[in-house]
Length: 563
Image 1 (tube, one colour):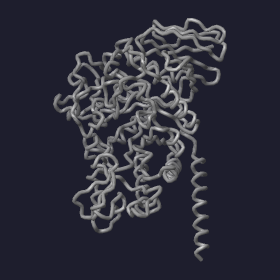
Image 2: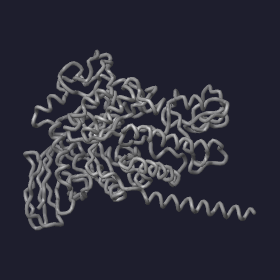
Image 3: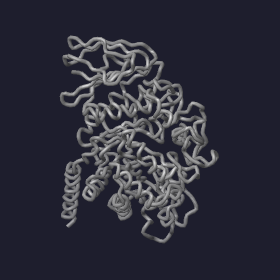
């Protein structure tokens, strides 16, 4: 009888593994609209305030939809807008089914979806799947001694004297400590453990009642907003929901189930991961992942200087010209190869967690144009973080605001109010300056949308033109191939080819303050070079006999179509 039972269990486990593989390989196709998607990330509290309380709101986003569309962006990613205690700027959710009062109402959010769709735009919400606020009614119920529906929705030890790493003690009715994900105010939701330790009874398998109820609730939340008109989700901490899962087996099972459910109901919806490693995120079922400052991606080696949330002495996009693109190029090539046609990468201009391109000594329009040329001519789906298109500055030295201060630096510098025009508060709010969510850039020369729309050489119009080129030329678009043509290690300028079918471009970018010249072999015979977009001092000087000779002046860029 024991042998039979063991055999049945072994067969069941084998079938479970086989089912997972089949499901992961059998996802429905990606929505076609992703091929031409251009994202614009909005930090809602800092975008546009319409009621004078100093905090941005959903109505403000609605009023600025035409601007986002004019820029060329057709998808908005909105940072968390749900009811929150705002101890981590909205990433500590109290109620996943309710818009925070300071932003408006559920009806306002539905109207945002509707207004965006009228303009053939999409809206994705930020889904904080891994934890809630300690003020959540779910967490309050889980603290009770009496067993209830939420007792096992969080990860609790069975003794208040047991406090493993990342567990928090306190005065609770139940006898135990709880696991946090980030701050103490963010108790981890229980999705189970991939490899639970029998000696730790709080480490439940993913099949236990609590973890199963949590994943069902997550799908309910997604269904609720999708049925209202949402177009998808960026999932916060997407790879860390299942604990102790080194081979990602149970994480793969989780997201395979969720994606299958999601696409069965909403075939045009998208799932984006905050993972930082597309080769893993896309494999488990996500449609897009970011290459950002996480997971040793090389992003920092390209952009992070001595000022910002995360600081480095040297980066590639620096006027000193002593950086290296090698690590970033290697990682990008690996991630693109792994993603293939199963998903997209996204390399944003910045986001709410790290510094903007305009940061420290990289603070002039010519410098920022080299950065924007690079980011807007890479494969994958581009993303403009609000304000980067006009060169808004990372503001150093701000106070800790809603958990913005980290050990390494303050994130508030990338979260200041959008600068619309020359009116009071830069057109962000009619409230008093003291009421603003964060102080505005106090510089007299701070850029605004109003000014830059009128200036033919502005960063705003330059960014708009770059986005338009992605739509005009498939080789520069989301699915175009890339091949880096660096002639030797660490050399400036940055040179790469974008190609799709017979259409080909070479992009040359020199972010340094030095004149640089280089000769390199090219694997095709070039008959003609046409400058599609270039700085006036930049040119390819020779292209004979499968060799390119390039001369790049300081802070120059060029996009050349090759025939």
